[in-house]
Length: 173
Image (cartoon, rainbow, N blue to C red; front, side):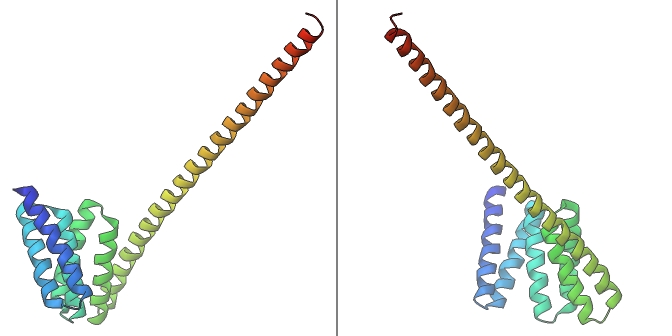
C-alpha cells in the first residue's frame, strides 16, 4: 500500500508540474497539496520537500507571502535534515525573495547566504563529478594507448621471430 501511495504522490507532483507549465495554478496547487498529504501519510520526506517547495513557489508568485514562508520554512528544515542541497537552495531562494518582499532585509540576507552556500555545494558536486568523469576518460584512454603499444610490440616481436626463423632456415639451419 505504501508503494501505491508513493506512486500516487509522485503522480500528483508530476501533474502539478504540468499544470504549472499550462498556467493552471489552482490545479497545480491541488496536486501539490495532495502529494504533500500523501507523503506525510507514508512519511516520505523527499516527496514532502518537493511538494512544499512547489507550494511555496506558487504562494510567492501569488503574493501570499505568509503561506510561502510557512511552506518554504518547512521545506528547508526537511531538506537540511536530509542533506538535500538542491531543495535547500530552492527553499532558501524562496525565503530570500519572500523576506525581500516583506522588506525584512536581514532575513532576506540570511537566506541569501544559505542559498549561495547550497549553490556552491551543488556546483562543487557537479564539478567533482565532471572531474571524476574526465579522470576515468583519461585513464581509459591511457589504458587503450598502452594496450595498442603492447599489441604493436608483440606484433613486432612476432615478426622478428618469424624473420629470424626464416633467415636460419635460409642459411641451412
